[in-house]
Length: 234
Image 1 (cartoon, rainbow, N blue to C red):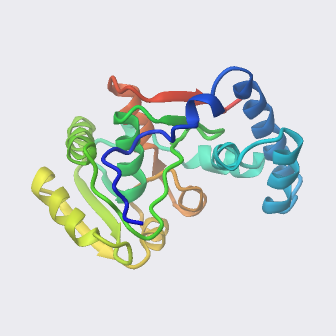
Image 2: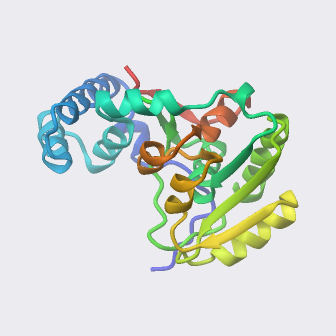
């Protein structure tokens, strides 16, 4: 069935899944899952154990999974995190889809989640294809404006070449920002090996990168967007 979505908005069930007593359960589930990860339990088994205990749906489990990490990984991530004032004159490499989709979701009023590491993450998924939505160009403009405020020396966007419509998105970003966009097969590898700051909330990138900056969280924190933000960091 063709993807006919016009917005990067919330799932119709999200208002019920992420409200009321469910929020307390999600916070406890995130704490429990993180504790099991700290004790080196296998990720899938730990998530099933916690999810079953709190009777979580698939989307609730996804929120818990994306918000959690072990104490060891948390400490390592925070040690490499850059603050906004440390970016002036620096080079930044942007995990294009990761940042853009989160900002699109924020502009559309979707539910977003603050994880243990302070990053803000969405529940969206591409499944190998990126579809331009109503929020795409406004989100790119917003990202570009915030990047200018950070007074960076060099900005490079990376997009996954294997994802359908990456070429079209590359042209849109270049037209809107006047910046540089590269299509590569595995952006994570480039983000991890680079000496530049990696702008991403992808856990694998945060764990492997030399330095990182939570660009989406910075943008959402600095602007008035209609996102419904749930803090699972505790």
